[in-house]
Image (tube, rainbow over all chains, first blue to last red; front, side, top):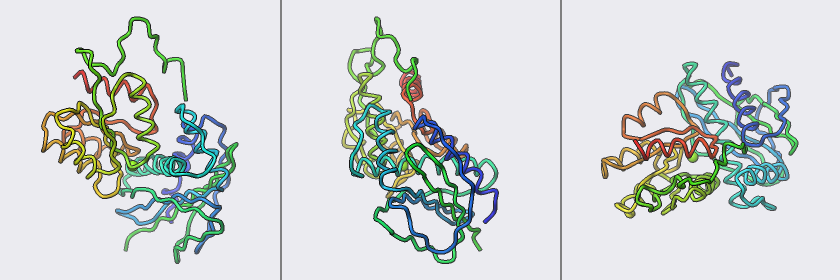
Length: 158
Length: 145
Ligand SMILES: [Mg+2]
């Protein structure tokens, strides 16, 4: 995977999380992961298509997802959530959409043309997402609510 | 995130959501995220706008617009949505009603997408994340121009 792809995701994740949650964000060290990977409990996924194909996965524990969604809802004077209900899921997928949208916009300005799909969300303990033969870069973000792992897998079309 | 500027003084000030005749502007909100439709709805109703409909994809947005017409003053239109994207829905709404007031609200800020939307007739383009001030400012610009 080309390294130019990853920085826009790191920057956008940092900017968007900071803007919508107004909390301290600490960026962890990037690392590589290969083959199918178990997720932490909640995974929002967005597909990428165009000059490249791939996907971005936002992986976090259920507790973290509930806390992040609650913080976003409360910043809009809406009720916090106790369960990861439809509103909670819609909030987490929109967070994924905002981060990916900003990253895709930055990449577009660098000359990489591709688009994103509407997000989907998976929940469940020890769930595995199989992407056979895809190498992914992980961008860990530490928040007061727990960590989010942003898992980016992009490959050039043949 | 709230700042002082988000809460303008209410002294003698007409709510943004009321037209010059005193009636509320009627808004259709199109976005595939329940979070965003609530968020935009919250911002607009707090200023006196009336949310007359919500839709979760472009096709539903187009159908709702036709159903509501002519009793709708403004559409907020997301872009990345299932079934039909917001740019296609914008194009079809403009074909149906060339005076439609549509504002794009998207996480994507790509220049070509902004240009294309404005060329197709969108009145404005707001890039997410949203805040109260940004949304109200852009919406007022498109209602008064
Ligand atoms: Mg959307």
